[in-house]
Length: 353
Image 1 (cartoon, rainbow, N blue to C red):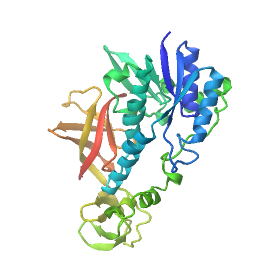
Image 2 (cartoon, one colour; image 1 turned 30 degrees about the vertical axis):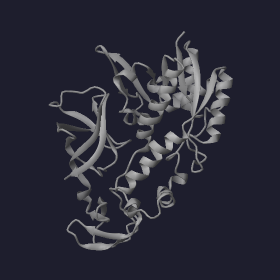
Image 3 (cartoon, rainbow, N blue to C red; image 1 turned 135 degrees about the vertical axis):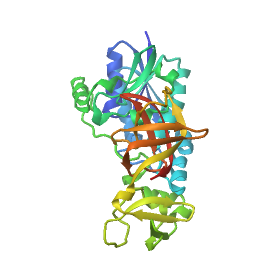
């Protein structure tokens, strides 16, 4: 009998994952990661209430259950990273970082220490074996597809990971969980960033690093260099933002750049929010394609993919889209696809109009 460690967050997705795998004949071991600090809010995926729900599901299923303490690793690799990126004028994606360093880093290592054959999660994505190799593909349900946050997985890891929900929609997941009498069948999904209460990242940053340069007042300029007003810290703004700028103009203005070096927020007209090319660092390929071919890329979770070409340099990639993309944001991940296969990604560094 094959053994699978299931990352159980206390929600319906991971609970059904454990139930399905047990019914398929695996020896299932449930594991919940303790990441909680005083900042975690009730509807996060990692609160103490979630641990209780995960333990209750494990007991109902009759499977072994562990709680692993990754609080220090989470603070070091996710929270500190999140803060540092914002204070450098970038907009990070902590879920991508958590998947790389914690779920498929520390937790993957824990599963190996138990001699488990597989690690499974409730992500909506698919792993298939085609053309002599394992491929990571989008979920069947376009609206729930979570492949974007998984691009840091390796080809070797794909052999040892299971995503049982990749073939289902969220409604199907809830219906199956209800049929199995799982008490979390209709539990609300976790929302926002798990360590940011009420999604108020501005207040979080202010409490975490109140004297940081990125939280100090500065000038708001248009793209010609004209001063239009003042801001309350570049970390409080994001690319594409229109509301809350506190300036008046003849036409709507949007944040088009955060100048961390000079402490300025740069704004422009609607058309200036769109960019056609960008540079990418921290590149990771699951499967490196022929870069002379046109690929597809997504610049943010929930966005549609756009066709692009890629030029490789020593320390970065230059990506050029066939059609301009709105609000390309340094610090966010760009993820590359070959049709429905996710092949790699990296971090957006610079934007070129």
